[in-house]
Image 1 (cartoon, rainbow over the protein chains, first blue to last red):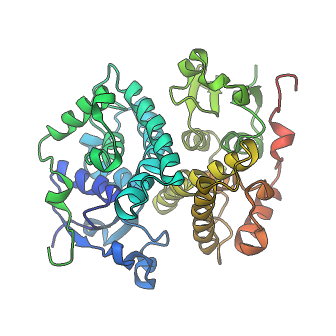
Image 2 (tube, one colour; image 1 turned 90 degrees about the horizontal axis):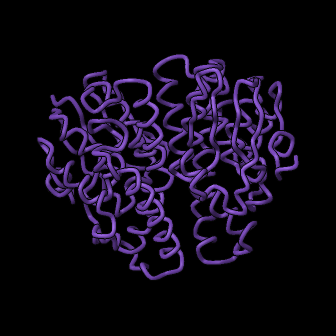
Length: 211
Length: 211
Protein backbone atom coordinates (compact mmCIF):
# COMPACT_ATOMS: atom_id res chain seq x y z
CA UNK A 1 0.00 0.00 0.00
CA UNK A 2 1.43 3.35 -0.99
CA UNK A 3 1.04 6.39 1.26
CA UNK A 4 -0.65 8.68 -1.27
CA UNK A 5 -2.76 8.35 -4.42
CA UNK A 6 -2.99 11.40 -6.67
CA UNK A 7 -5.87 11.63 -9.16
CA UNK A 8 -4.27 13.52 -12.03
CA UNK A 9 -3.45 13.66 -15.74
CA UNK A 10 -0.38 14.79 -17.60
CA UNK A 11 -1.65 18.07 -19.01
CA UNK A 12 -2.79 19.56 -15.69
CA UNK A 13 -0.49 22.10 -14.13
CA UNK A 14 -2.63 22.11 -11.00
CA UNK A 15 -2.11 18.35 -10.69
CA UNK A 16 1.60 18.84 -11.35
CA UNK A 17 1.82 21.13 -8.30
CA UNK A 18 0.79 18.20 -6.09
CA UNK A 19 2.81 15.61 -8.03
CA UNK A 20 5.93 17.79 -7.91
CA UNK A 21 5.55 18.24 -4.16
CA UNK A 22 5.21 14.49 -3.61
CA UNK A 23 8.18 13.90 -5.89
CA UNK A 24 10.48 16.51 -4.30
CA UNK A 25 9.54 15.22 -0.85
CA UNK A 26 10.43 11.67 -1.82
CA UNK A 27 6.96 10.53 -0.84
CA UNK A 28 5.63 7.04 -1.48
CA UNK A 29 2.87 7.86 -3.99
CA UNK A 30 1.19 6.69 -7.17
CA UNK A 31 -0.81 8.53 -9.83
CA UNK A 32 -4.38 7.59 -10.76
CA UNK A 33 -5.35 8.73 -14.26
CA UNK A 34 -8.41 11.00 -14.65
CA UNK A 35 -9.78 11.17 -18.20
CA UNK A 36 -10.34 14.92 -17.97
CA UNK A 37 -10.23 15.48 -21.73
CA UNK A 38 -13.29 13.25 -22.06
CA UNK A 39 -15.08 14.88 -19.14
CA UNK A 40 -14.56 12.22 -16.45
CA UNK A 41 -14.25 14.99 -13.84
CA UNK A 42 -17.85 16.02 -14.50
CA UNK A 43 -19.30 12.58 -13.76
CA UNK A 44 -21.44 12.06 -10.67
CA UNK A 45 -18.82 9.58 -9.41
CA UNK A 46 -16.08 12.18 -9.60
CA UNK A 47 -18.26 14.97 -8.19
CA UNK A 48 -18.92 12.73 -5.21
CA UNK A 49 -15.16 12.82 -4.58
CA UNK A 50 -14.69 16.50 -5.44
CA UNK A 51 -17.66 18.86 -5.39
CA UNK A 52 -15.57 21.39 -7.33
CA UNK A 53 -15.28 18.95 -10.24
CA UNK A 54 -11.53 19.44 -10.66
CA UNK A 55 -8.21 17.70 -10.46
CA UNK A 56 -6.04 17.17 -8.52
CA UNK A 57 -7.52 14.99 -5.80
CA UNK A 58 -5.17 13.53 -3.19
CA UNK A 59 -6.03 10.50 -1.09
CA UNK A 60 -3.83 10.31 2.00
CA UNK A 61 -3.72 6.64 2.97
CA UNK A 62 -1.65 7.46 6.06
CA UNK A 63 -4.67 9.26 7.50
CA UNK A 64 -7.52 6.82 6.90
CA UNK A 65 -7.84 7.55 3.16
CA UNK A 66 -8.41 11.23 3.84
CA UNK A 67 -9.45 12.84 0.54
CA UNK A 68 -8.31 16.37 -0.27
CA UNK A 69 -9.07 18.61 -3.23
CA UNK A 70 -7.78 21.98 -4.51
CA UNK A 71 -4.06 22.15 -5.19
CA UNK A 72 -3.34 24.87 -2.63
CA UNK A 73 -4.99 22.90 0.16
CA UNK A 74 -3.23 19.70 -0.92
CA UNK A 75 0.13 21.48 -0.74
CA UNK A 76 -0.81 22.93 2.65
CA UNK A 77 -1.66 19.44 3.90
CA UNK A 78 1.51 17.88 2.53
CA UNK A 79 3.65 20.58 4.16
CA UNK A 80 2.64 19.10 7.52
CA UNK A 81 3.98 15.71 6.47
CA UNK A 82 7.07 17.14 4.73
CA UNK A 83 8.01 20.21 6.78
CA UNK A 84 11.15 20.91 4.77
CA UNK A 85 8.78 22.72 2.37
CA UNK A 86 6.77 24.47 5.09
CA UNK A 87 7.03 27.91 6.63
CA UNK A 88 9.13 27.98 9.80
CA UNK A 89 7.84 31.16 11.47
CA UNK A 90 4.82 33.49 11.33
CA UNK A 91 6.36 35.83 8.74
CA UNK A 92 7.09 32.96 6.35
CA UNK A 93 3.69 31.47 7.11
CA UNK A 94 1.98 34.67 5.93
CA UNK A 95 4.14 34.93 2.84
CA UNK A 96 3.49 31.31 1.87
CA UNK A 97 -0.27 31.76 2.11
CA UNK A 98 -0.17 35.15 0.36
CA UNK A 99 1.70 33.79 -2.64
CA UNK A 100 -0.38 30.62 -2.92
CA UNK A 101 -3.44 32.87 -3.02
CA UNK A 102 -1.74 35.08 -5.61
CA UNK A 103 -1.00 31.98 -7.66
CA UNK A 104 -4.62 30.87 -7.63
CA UNK A 105 -6.04 34.34 -8.22
CA UNK A 106 -3.63 35.93 -10.66
CA UNK A 107 -1.04 33.51 -12.04
CA UNK A 108 -2.77 30.16 -12.53
CA UNK A 109 -6.03 32.13 -12.76
CA UNK A 110 -4.86 33.61 -16.08
CA UNK A 111 -2.07 31.38 -17.41
CA UNK A 112 -4.00 28.12 -17.17
CA UNK A 113 -6.96 29.58 -19.03
CA UNK A 114 -4.82 31.10 -21.79
CA UNK A 115 -2.97 27.80 -22.19
CA UNK A 116 -6.22 25.84 -22.27
CA UNK A 117 -7.74 28.07 -24.95
CA UNK A 118 -4.54 28.01 -27.00
CA UNK A 119 -3.44 24.38 -26.70
CA UNK A 120 -6.68 22.46 -26.23
CA UNK A 121 -9.25 24.69 -27.96
CA UNK A 122 -7.13 26.17 -30.79
CA UNK A 123 -8.42 29.63 -29.76
CA UNK A 124 -5.12 31.28 -28.85
CA UNK A 125 -5.79 34.35 -30.99
CA UNK A 126 -9.34 34.94 -29.74
CA UNK A 127 -10.11 38.13 -27.77
CA UNK A 128 -10.74 36.11 -24.60
CA UNK A 129 -7.41 34.28 -24.90
CA UNK A 130 -5.50 37.49 -25.57
CA UNK A 131 -7.21 39.13 -22.61
CA UNK A 132 -6.10 36.29 -20.35
CA UNK A 133 -2.61 36.50 -21.82
CA UNK A 134 -2.44 40.16 -20.83
CA UNK A 135 -3.37 39.28 -17.27
CA UNK A 136 -0.80 36.45 -17.30
CA UNK A 137 1.94 38.89 -18.33
CA UNK A 138 1.01 41.22 -15.46
CA UNK A 139 1.22 38.31 -13.01
CA UNK A 140 4.56 37.18 -14.43
CA UNK A 141 5.95 40.70 -14.00
CA UNK A 142 4.83 40.76 -10.36
CA UNK A 143 6.45 37.38 -9.69
CA UNK A 144 9.62 38.37 -11.55
CA UNK A 145 9.95 41.51 -9.42
CA UNK A 146 9.39 39.43 -6.29
CA UNK A 147 12.25 37.09 -7.24
CA UNK A 148 14.69 39.95 -7.88
CA UNK A 149 17.28 39.40 -5.16
CA UNK A 150 15.55 36.35 -3.69
CA UNK A 151 16.18 32.66 -4.27
CA UNK A 152 12.67 31.63 -3.19
CA UNK A 153 9.30 33.34 -3.11
CA UNK A 154 8.27 33.16 0.53
CA UNK A 155 11.22 32.05 2.67
CA UNK A 156 14.99 31.48 2.50
CA UNK A 157 14.20 27.91 1.41
CA UNK A 158 11.91 26.34 -1.19
CA UNK A 159 8.33 26.18 0.12
CA UNK A 160 4.95 25.07 -1.13
CA UNK A 161 4.47 28.63 -2.45
CA UNK A 162 7.29 28.08 -4.95
CA UNK A 163 5.88 24.69 -5.93
CA UNK A 164 2.40 26.17 -6.44
CA UNK A 165 3.60 29.11 -8.55
CA UNK A 166 5.92 26.95 -10.67
CA UNK A 167 3.28 24.38 -11.56
CA UNK A 168 2.38 25.77 -14.97
CA UNK A 169 5.74 27.35 -15.82
CA UNK A 170 7.64 24.27 -16.97
CA UNK A 171 5.73 24.42 -20.28
CA UNK A 172 6.61 28.02 -21.25
CA UNK A 173 6.12 27.42 -24.99
CA UNK A 174 2.53 26.30 -24.45
CA UNK A 175 1.76 29.67 -22.90
CA UNK A 176 3.88 31.78 -25.29
CA UNK A 177 6.17 32.74 -22.40
CA UNK A 178 9.71 33.72 -23.37
CA UNK A 179 11.64 33.21 -20.15
CA UNK A 180 14.30 35.61 -21.44
CA UNK A 181 11.77 38.33 -20.55
CA UNK A 182 11.62 37.11 -16.96
CA UNK A 183 15.16 36.32 -15.94
CA UNK A 184 14.52 36.05 -12.21
CA UNK A 185 11.75 33.55 -12.90
CA UNK A 186 13.99 31.59 -15.29
CA UNK A 187 16.75 31.23 -12.69
CA UNK A 188 14.23 30.27 -10.00
CA UNK A 189 12.73 27.54 -12.23
CA UNK A 190 16.26 26.23 -12.75
CA UNK A 191 16.78 26.20 -8.97
CA UNK A 192 13.64 24.12 -8.48
CA UNK A 193 14.65 21.75 -11.30
CA UNK A 194 18.03 21.28 -9.58
CA UNK A 195 16.46 20.08 -6.33
CA UNK A 196 16.87 16.38 -5.43
CA UNK A 197 14.12 14.15 -6.91
CA UNK A 198 12.87 16.83 -9.34
CA UNK A 199 10.95 15.36 -12.27
CA UNK A 200 9.12 16.89 -15.20
CA UNK A 201 5.33 16.41 -15.58
CA UNK A 202 5.69 13.79 -18.32
CA UNK A 203 7.92 11.68 -16.09
CA UNK A 204 5.47 11.38 -13.20
CA UNK A 205 1.90 11.87 -14.49
CA UNK A 206 -0.02 9.62 -16.90
CA UNK A 207 -1.31 10.83 -20.26
CA UNK A 208 -3.74 7.95 -20.57
CA UNK A 209 -5.24 5.09 -18.61
CA UNK A 210 -2.75 2.63 -20.09
CA UNK A 211 0.35 4.27 -18.69
CA UNK B 1 -5.42 55.17 18.02
CA UNK B 2 -7.63 52.63 16.29
CA UNK B 3 -6.62 48.97 16.15
CA UNK B 4 -6.74 48.54 12.37
CA UNK B 5 -6.44 50.74 9.28
CA UNK B 6 -7.81 49.33 6.02
CA UNK B 7 -6.60 50.82 2.73
CA UNK B 8 -9.66 50.45 0.51
CA UNK B 9 -12.21 52.09 -1.76
CA UNK B 10 -15.93 51.65 -2.14
CA UNK B 11 -16.01 49.75 -5.42
CA UNK B 12 -13.61 46.97 -4.40
CA UNK B 13 -15.19 43.68 -3.45
CA UNK B 14 -11.83 42.40 -2.29
CA UNK B 15 -11.55 45.37 0.08
CA UNK B 16 -15.13 44.75 1.20
CA UNK B 17 -14.18 41.22 2.30
CA UNK B 18 -11.76 42.72 4.85
CA UNK B 19 -14.08 45.61 5.77
CA UNK B 20 -17.01 43.25 6.30
CA UNK B 21 -14.91 41.01 8.53
CA UNK B 22 -13.80 43.96 10.67
CA UNK B 23 -17.37 45.19 10.82
CA UNK B 24 -18.95 41.83 11.74
CA UNK B 25 -16.26 41.30 14.36
CA UNK B 26 -16.98 44.68 15.91
CA UNK B 27 -13.34 45.65 15.48
CA UNK B 28 -12.02 49.14 16.16
CA UNK B 29 -11.01 50.12 12.61
CA UNK B 30 -10.96 52.97 10.13
CA UNK B 31 -10.82 53.07 6.32
CA UNK B 32 -8.07 54.85 4.39
CA UNK B 33 -9.13 55.81 0.86
CA UNK B 34 -7.03 54.53 -2.07
CA UNK B 35 -7.62 56.39 -5.33
CA UNK B 36 -7.59 53.18 -7.35
CA UNK B 37 -9.61 54.59 -10.24
CA UNK B 38 -6.83 57.12 -10.85
CA UNK B 39 -4.09 54.50 -10.49
CA UNK B 40 -2.83 55.31 -6.99
CA UNK B 41 -2.22 51.59 -6.42
CA UNK B 42 0.40 51.58 -9.18
CA UNK B 43 2.50 54.33 -7.63
CA UNK B 44 5.95 53.51 -6.23
CA UNK B 45 4.69 54.60 -2.79
CA UNK B 46 1.87 52.08 -2.89
CA UNK B 47 4.01 49.31 -4.38
CA UNK B 48 6.38 49.81 -1.45
CA UNK B 49 3.43 48.85 0.80
CA UNK B 50 2.09 46.10 -1.46
CA UNK B 51 4.31 44.52 -4.10
CA UNK B 52 1.20 43.04 -5.71
CA UNK B 53 -0.13 46.56 -6.40
CA UNK B 54 -3.62 45.79 -5.09
CA UNK B 55 -6.13 46.69 -2.43
CA UNK B 56 -6.95 45.84 0.28
CA UNK B 57 -4.02 46.51 2.58
CA UNK B 58 -4.53 46.07 6.31
CA UNK B 59 -2.32 47.71 8.92
CA UNK B 60 -2.65 45.98 12.29
CA UNK B 61 -1.73 48.58 14.90
CA UNK B 62 -2.11 46.02 17.70
CA UNK B 63 0.93 44.20 16.29
CA UNK B 64 3.42 46.99 15.70
CA UNK B 65 1.76 48.32 12.55
CA UNK B 66 2.04 44.94 10.87
CA UNK B 67 1.07 45.41 7.20
CA UNK B 68 -0.82 42.64 5.40
CA UNK B 69 -1.95 42.36 1.81
CA UNK B 70 -4.19 39.97 -0.18
CA UNK B 71 -7.74 39.63 1.07
CA UNK B 72 -7.48 35.92 1.85
CA UNK B 73 -4.41 36.40 4.01
CA UNK B 74 -6.00 39.41 5.75
CA UNK B 75 -9.05 37.32 6.63
CA UNK B 76 -6.80 34.51 7.82
CA UNK B 77 -4.92 36.94 10.07
CA UNK B 78 -8.09 38.50 11.45
CA UNK B 79 -9.52 35.08 12.28
CA UNK B 80 -6.79 34.77 14.91
CA UNK B 81 -7.97 37.98 16.56
CA UNK B 82 -11.68 37.21 16.14
CA UNK B 83 -11.92 33.43 16.47
CA UNK B 84 -15.71 33.41 16.24
CA UNK B 85 -15.11 33.43 12.46
CA UNK B 86 -12.31 30.85 12.51
CA UNK B 87 -12.28 27.11 11.97
CA UNK B 88 -12.53 25.14 15.18
CA UNK B 89 -11.07 21.78 14.13
CA UNK B 90 -8.90 20.31 11.36
CA UNK B 91 -11.82 19.42 9.10
CA UNK B 92 -13.21 22.95 9.22
CA UNK B 93 -9.71 24.33 8.84
CA UNK B 94 -9.28 22.47 5.56
CA UNK B 95 -12.70 23.51 4.28
CA UNK B 96 -12.07 27.16 5.13
CA UNK B 97 -8.80 27.20 3.22
CA UNK B 98 -10.25 25.21 0.31
CA UNK B 99 -13.13 27.63 -0.21
CA UNK B 100 -11.02 30.76 0.19
CA UNK B 101 -8.77 29.33 -2.54
CA UNK B 102 -11.82 28.53 -4.66
CA UNK B 103 -13.03 32.08 -4.16
CA UNK B 104 -9.73 33.54 -5.35
CA UNK B 105 -9.32 31.10 -8.23
CA UNK B 106 -12.82 30.65 -9.58
CA UNK B 107 -15.37 33.03 -8.05
CA UNK B 108 -13.62 36.37 -7.55
CA UNK B 109 -11.25 35.30 -10.32
CA UNK B 110 -14.09 35.55 -12.83
CA UNK B 111 -16.82 37.71 -11.26
CA UNK B 112 -14.56 40.64 -10.39
CA UNK B 113 -13.14 40.78 -13.91
CA UNK B 114 -16.55 40.57 -15.58
CA UNK B 115 -17.87 43.31 -13.28
CA UNK B 116 -14.82 45.49 -13.93
CA UNK B 117 -15.17 45.17 -17.70
CA UNK B 118 -18.91 45.80 -17.56
CA UNK B 119 -19.18 48.57 -14.97
CA UNK B 120 -15.89 50.42 -15.25
CA UNK B 121 -14.86 49.80 -18.87
CA UNK B 122 -18.27 49.65 -20.56
CA UNK B 123 -17.19 46.39 -22.22
CA UNK B 124 -19.79 44.03 -20.81
CA UNK B 125 -20.72 42.63 -24.21
CA UNK B 126 -17.14 42.02 -25.37
CA UNK B 127 -15.99 38.42 -25.98
CA UNK B 128 -13.60 38.61 -23.02
CA UNK B 129 -16.34 39.83 -20.67
CA UNK B 130 -18.78 37.17 -21.84
CA UNK B 131 -16.10 34.51 -21.41
CA UNK B 132 -15.51 35.63 -17.82
CA UNK B 133 -19.27 35.68 -17.26
CA UNK B 134 -19.46 32.04 -18.33
CA UNK B 135 -16.78 31.13 -15.82
CA UNK B 136 -18.59 33.16 -13.14
CA UNK B 137 -21.80 31.22 -13.76
CA UNK B 138 -19.93 27.92 -13.37
CA UNK B 139 -18.47 29.10 -10.06
CA UNK B 140 -21.88 30.30 -8.84
CA UNK B 141 -23.37 26.89 -9.64
CA UNK B 142 -20.63 25.16 -7.66
CA UNK B 143 -21.20 27.45 -4.67
CA UNK B 144 -24.99 27.10 -4.92
CA UNK B 145 -24.67 23.29 -4.86
CA UNK B 146 -22.35 23.55 -1.86
CA UNK B 147 -24.93 25.60 0.07
CA UNK B 148 -27.77 23.15 -0.64
CA UNK B 149 -28.56 21.86 2.85
CA UNK B 150 -25.90 23.95 4.57
CA UNK B 151 -26.18 27.28 6.36
CA UNK B 152 -22.50 28.13 5.91
CA UNK B 153 -19.82 27.12 3.44
CA UNK B 154 -17.13 25.57 5.61
CA UNK B 155 -18.44 24.98 9.13
CA UNK B 156 -21.67 25.03 11.14
CA UNK B 157 -21.00 28.72 11.81
CA UNK B 158 -20.09 31.71 9.64
CA UNK B 159 -16.35 31.70 8.88
CA UNK B 160 -13.90 33.77 6.89
CA UNK B 161 -14.66 31.48 3.93
CA UNK B 162 -18.23 32.81 3.82
CA UNK B 163 -17.00 36.40 4.15
CA UNK B 164 -14.50 35.90 1.34
CA UNK B 165 -16.99 34.31 -1.06
CA UNK B 166 -19.70 36.87 -0.31
CA UNK B 167 -17.49 39.90 -0.94
CA UNK B 168 -18.60 40.58 -4.51
CA UNK B 169 -22.11 39.18 -4.24
CA UNK B 170 -23.88 42.09 -2.57
CA UNK B 171 -23.89 43.93 -5.92
CA UNK B 172 -25.66 41.24 -8.01
CA UNK B 173 -26.99 43.73 -10.58
CA UNK B 174 -23.49 44.94 -11.40
CA UNK B 175 -22.54 41.39 -12.39
CA UNK B 176 -25.85 40.50 -14.11
CA UNK B 177 -26.53 37.89 -11.43
CA UNK B 178 -30.19 37.03 -10.87
CA UNK B 179 -30.19 35.55 -7.39
CA UNK B 180 -33.47 33.78 -8.20
CA UNK B 181 -31.26 31.38 -10.20
CA UNK B 182 -29.17 30.62 -7.11
CA UNK B 183 -31.59 30.26 -4.26
CA UNK B 184 -29.18 28.68 -1.80
CA UNK B 185 -26.76 31.56 -2.38
CA UNK B 186 -29.57 34.10 -1.98
CA UNK B 187 -30.61 32.70 1.41
CA UNK B 188 -26.99 32.51 2.56
CA UNK B 189 -26.40 36.17 1.63
CA UNK B 190 -29.50 37.04 3.67
CA UNK B 191 -28.07 35.07 6.60
CA UNK B 192 -24.83 37.05 6.47
CA UNK B 193 -26.75 40.34 6.17
CA UNK B 194 -28.73 39.38 9.28
CA UNK B 195 -25.60 38.96 11.43
CA UNK B 196 -24.96 41.59 14.13
CA UNK B 197 -23.01 44.62 12.87
CA UNK B 198 -23.53 43.78 9.18
CA UNK B 199 -23.10 46.79 6.91
CA UNK B 200 -23.19 47.27 3.17
CA UNK B 201 -20.07 48.42 1.28
CA UNK B 202 -21.34 51.98 0.84
CA UNK B 203 -21.84 52.30 4.60
CA UNK B 204 -18.28 51.44 5.58
CA UNK B 205 -15.91 52.18 2.68
CA UNK B 206 -15.14 55.61 1.18
CA UNK B 207 -15.86 56.48 -2.45
CA UNK B 208 -13.51 59.45 -2.39
CA UNK B 209 -10.84 61.07 -0.27
CA UNK B 210 -13.33 63.55 1.17
CA UNK B 211 -15.53 60.99 2.86
